[in-house]
Image 1 (cartoon, rainbow, N blue to C red):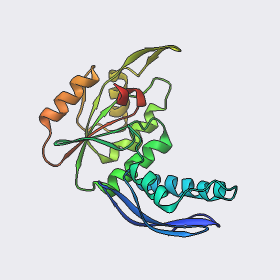
Image 2 (image 1 turned 90 degrees about the horizontal axis):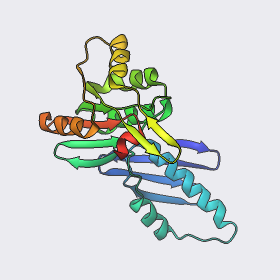
Image 3 (image 1 turned 90 degrees about the vertical axis):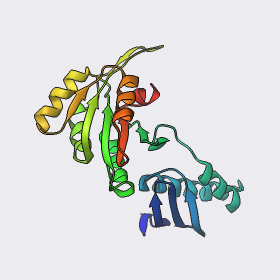
Amino acid sequence: MSLLDKDFSYKLKSVTEKGSVFDYAGEKTIRNLKLNLLGEFQIENAALAIRAIELISNFKFQISNSDLRKGLKEAFIPGRLEIIKKDPLVISDGAHNLDKMNALVASLKSIFPKRKVKAIVAIKYDKNAVEIIRILLPICQEITFTGYEIKTDQGVIKSYEPRELEIILKRIDQDIPVSVVSDPKDALIKAEKDASETDLILITGSLYLVGR
């Protein structure tokens, strides 16, 4: 049982690569809610959303339990623990700060404990690359650094140069296999080509990378 507030809580029943099942207890108890989004942090988000619905309902805005179940089951957030391919297994997650990277790592440990994680990583130049890499590193069998430069209405958005990230990694861990592939698509093609049945290819470090 996870208590979010004195007025509501959730009980996790299962978390798998197919989604999660949980019970909610608030103004009412709703059992066996299905959420296709991966990771326990998404269940906490869902419980908060249900609590918000309960509060809104007090102002005569009603959402039925069946609609609530349907909404949770169909909820989808691209680039957030998103399985984009199953053979080989490829997951994208735009974790770009310390909290999100911690949540990602915890979820992968829980849902895919036997998978060998091979990460494709780019990090926006103004982010804390050292700590992001430090958090990610323990679950990785190997890492490929890549990069991007994107023109937007706000100007040019750049990642760290992949070689800079490689230097950062080597200061933390000299032993983990690391490579640099400048183009993200080429990095993914290579990773898929080399993947075994037990590999998990993880694309992470930046929403801009996931978008590419």
